[in-house]
Image (cartoon, rainbow, N blue to C red; front, side, top):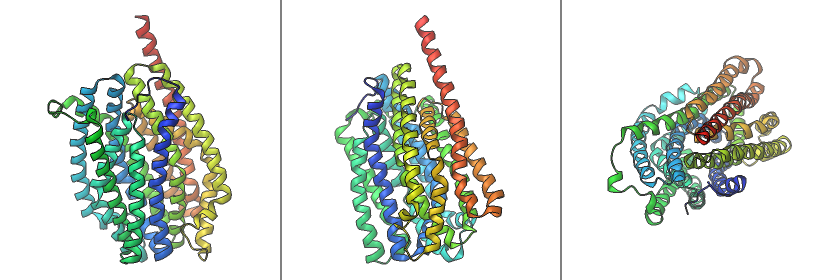
Length: 450
């Protein structure tokens, strides 16, 4: 059900919203982990490296799309908070049109340039074919990925994080069954893992669409809503494109880092892949919490309740820092053991490298509590053009490390690249978020004086 976050205790509302979203993120990461675990355990370390060698380019392209979808939902949340449902439906319709355009352009372009992308990533010859088989299916399945992310973002914009979670549970079960069938039963290798993921995402998208059709008449654009509006399209692009670019800019730095790491050999590619899977899973609470705070900020901004915004953001950051300290300690002491989910105990060198990577990052996870919550709050308040610079700072940090330090310090430099990028982004976003919130409060005070 749709739920307004403009009344009630901020932290309680944020956590209630974030919990289903967290569970959904964990399930999404679970079927990513299942892909990697089955590939690594059944097909071996080289096959795992084939899947992992493309992770940064997926983040680049799919991250841009997911960022745009999340940005398109910001005006929807603001109009919902303001009770302006007619304008909200127009934004939903126009978001759909823009998303279809992205589907066509990116699916065709990426599929045609797959070989060039893999060469750009310095993909080792020993894992090249597996990497190609995996990523080409992911590219061809982008329409399903985009459709799910748009529809789920719209549901979350109106306060419903429960149903996207339920649909992801269904998709996870399907993904597990298809993984086993395609990889073990049919012997389709890396391509089978990708195909299972895409089919699962397609099911999630269909479930969202059917649910909205039968249960959310409020969100279905009517005949009078289905018209082109240049001003609203401009607003969607103004918010959505910078959010997409922020993901992509961050991903470019990750691609440079991955390309540098790929040059260190199969052992470090496999270790980096396993450690990255664990890292992504561990980051899920940050993403859920930050999305909850962002939705809270968007709805209250639309409702003109500016004082609630600062309180919600502060409480969200405090929770994020606390979780960051906790998960950092877990990865510090148990990172190598967790890597055995993906890597056989016989692969001692790979396990040691993965454990070392996770131990190096463990000291800095608290900074993600500031970075994620502050950045998504900035975006949720409509200032995604400012949030993009945090991605630029992360790009610069990873680029310097990839080009200068990796040749000198090898895998040690790779292991400290993300923490340095996190710290630089957190410093920037923390300061910008404070300035924006103060500016909004001044605006509120000025209106009261008048």
